[in-house]
Length: 213
Length: 339
Image (tube, rainbow over all chains, first blue to last red):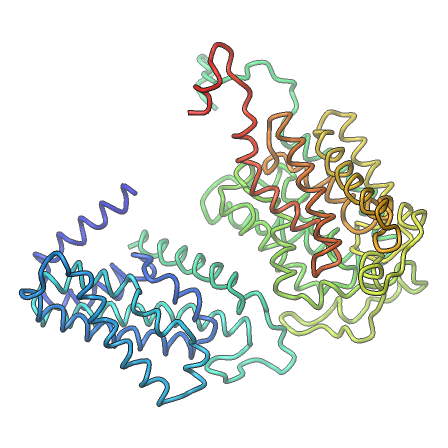
């Protein structure tokens, strides 16, 4: 807990002084939403069973994050403080509805395999936390960079999980078989338990890499 | 070691002179008859499976210690026990590469990630087996008949499957007594069960040798006798009640005790010193939870065998059991303890 507070303090402190390209970079590495902030675990664990699902989920979240950050940032002086969370949810829900229909239009199979998790982007704490902690306090330009950085970082992390899980659990990547036909699938990897294992191992690797820096 | 002139330590100050590695070494001695019988009844492939999982455990422990720049702890024999126990819970024709992965997972995810020996929440060997069961459900439930005449000259092809490739399991058969009862309603004679003239995991077949090992450890005061007694007693009572209600639908309590991994689990796995509770009452509760859960899973679960999950669940409960059964500290009142 104490460690968490320290990190948040450092993170909020960095906003004031950092140059604007840093708003993009920080989401990729230093404040990666999955590996460092451990936000939005529900979609991370649930739809990272294949690389395709993971990438689609990451891109959908990035789109919603970008649009909601733009709107929240441009309306930041008009939204009354007392109803700000409700307003953010309303803004986010609008874009989630759009992306829901877009995915249906592109591929009905993808929509089926992502299931309820598209609608659940509404309550993804990553998006809400960027709206509350960043977009409502910063200019539109900075908010766009922040959303892009966080979105790409989130997509990257989801892809890291999805690739490992699909590779071991299915022997393939993007449905393209990489191993001989009699490859033994690690069935646990495409089960929910495999999501926890893979996330734990990535967190371990990421933290040890950060420590070495 | 601290300075030689001033040695500061916490209690207990009077010890019996029994160290971790001497206890662990004695557990290995107690396991040896079971290992020998496994090799005798299932032949060369069982020997290879047990050796592979043991080597994997010791290698992983050594490597992880080196990686975290600590002194290697393989000399305390605990990794050997984990490897032997894991090997003894696997089918005799289990692919060697899977057994190796199981050993690595058992030590890395079951033990070292929590901080090594003394910090593991779960029995490491069972963590390894649980991951293997979830990963390779077909290979881990494909049994092989025991006492085949060619068992010392011929290694089944599935044992030597190429790493990460599917083993060829089509030609194999041989149901365990538990799966025969669950799926075909065929019972096995208790004599055969006790003497190990049956199919099953490499080390779970001969109940008498397992009991012998347990009695040796209890006699040397290196094992808490309450745990196996509680596990076997509660399993016996619960299955006995159902047997009395309907002896056609439910197997006899003796069959329940001597079949499957219950004996091995009760004697060697539930008694894991780190993952079991410490208080005398807590130990009884812990053992009873394992016995009851095992019977419940066997009778109504989807799997024929449930000892592994019963022990892992009870391991997760054991810190809470310890907390609930703390004895009252002299001089305090009951309400003070609970706050």
